[in-house]
Length: 305
Length: 305
Image (cartoon, rainbow over all chains, first blue to last red; front, side, top):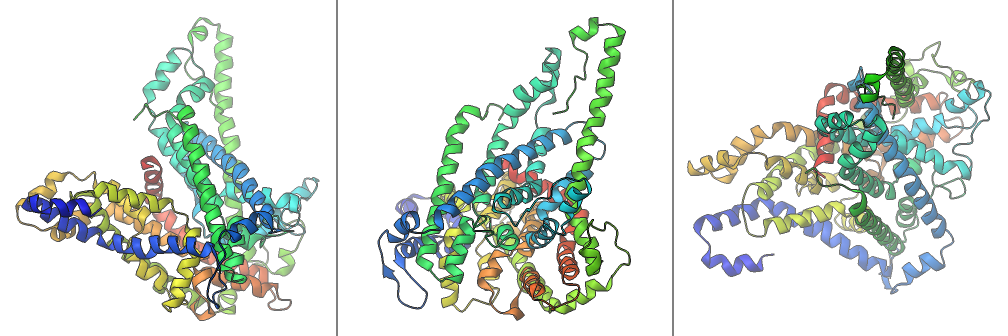
């Protein structure tokens, strides 16, 4: 990165030298920060993932043992992996799909659009700790308000957070409730779709459903891809809501990759194992992003730009 | 979803009066059905926040009643004060505001402006290649850095302080650098070049031209940094250890664990809801006053991705 400018330094004009000096000066905080707070931690995380380290005794080199143990020896890890995949692979597409439909609804002629948009966005910015507290209460099996409503309607009550079968769907429900940012992003992108396309389609006799399928979806597909990718990256690292709502339970059914990492690192002080989990998270994120980007060639339309 | 043919198609043009009436009824029906979806949706999205508030006003018998009490009577406003004083929430609020949120936000805005300017408006060799590294670190999951940062801050005696946020803020936040760079690129070079011809150096340009011009963008990123810090739970969970240094998020968590001790407080659950509501309130108020800024910021992140 610096080799080339140095070689050419002698041939550079006064203005070029001046630009280089100022440019490097301005971005130097980032360069320093990158080396200390990004690059070094990343490399040392990789280092710890090959060691046993309990923060008191010196790290002991283990080779790939942390990784191998996770997949062959750890009784909890397969469950954790399954929980995380369940939560993300089901939760994120539902959440993004829901956000997309709501955004389309809000993009029609609506009285009070700003109000509805605000109401749907608000849960996304309420502190997650506060949300967790009220959802825990709302979803309580005995005296929670949702089951109160179900009782009033003479429907069977749901053990939201106390049954392993319901705990993950319950967390997905909270996930959907916080998709307001995606709604706002979709709405902005829908408003960018040229009106003329819809007008032309109506003249050709295409009905609303066909317009949705053949104009709306292709024209906003880059944003759908963007929301899916960011949604997956966030969901793979979900911590606050499961940690406060269910503490990983019942019966490990909501122990996700990040809560498991946290437990290993900061409760059991197994820094090596925790680092190996972190790299598994990174690997999963990379694979998911790659799959989405690959598939995007087939369904994402970039012609509009 | 509920879109109905608005313009009469060629068929409709030829059709009888009754068919036109039907399509008009369908049109009205379609209009109504939008609100049939949106109004219950808005109510269910707001309900948890409403529930937080009304539960804060109840006493235990009203909280644990089936069916749930929608409007508390009598009302216990004193819950807010009692809950706030049950644990040292004044200290937690002080820590959150003056040790975490404000310094971090201010430092981030200044540092990211400087860095983003260096990436957007000064033309130095390999600038864009270096910028790819910024984008790359944006994708790096924070899970990977968690363990090494903890160990590093432990060695530096930064645990139990707010240095992990305030000091690192000086080195920029990749995501905010990215957003500001996008914004700065829309500022015409002619203005900057004219100033350069007049002998202004880059610092003068930054101070006299960029800061005033970029104010709306700086408000957006400042608002977001503020919100992330205010809502942060996992960060303090890892780096803050003793109660006197807790931010509000950890205070709520502590109150919850206290509330679980039998006999610790009489109106534990109302207390928990009261404090959760009070912590969410500043964000809710900010949203009411700066809804457009929030929405613009969120839309910006999506459409530039």
